[in-house]
Image (cartoon, rainbow, N blue to C red; front, side, top):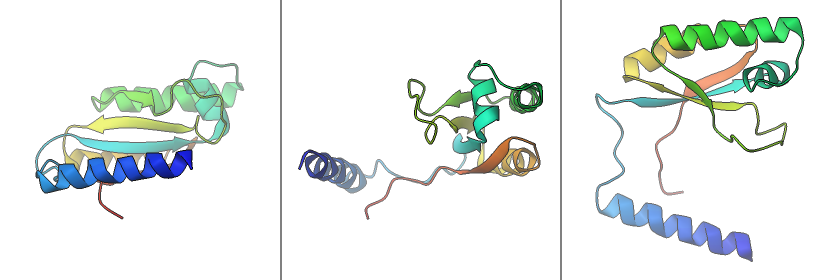
Length: 123
């Protein structure tokens, strides 16, 4: 019941924002990119003890993000849940940059997935 109430509230908030025209896809602005790291790489990025190989992969991922001008930060910073701890958010300056960043990240060890965060929409 508690979850149903939360879902109903979320729908009303999104519906109200859509009616007011607040939810629009970005045309030339920053784009959120979701990055899913493997368990070991995720632990290394979060500064927890991991293998040398995972730490090397994490360093490469962080270095690549920094060189592209985008900081990688945990999407769920306080979680200990292994399913959620692998998700990170990276803000790309534009849609074109997001596309390039995603392609580069997907070629790296430790990166399981990278995609543009979908815009909020009604179900």
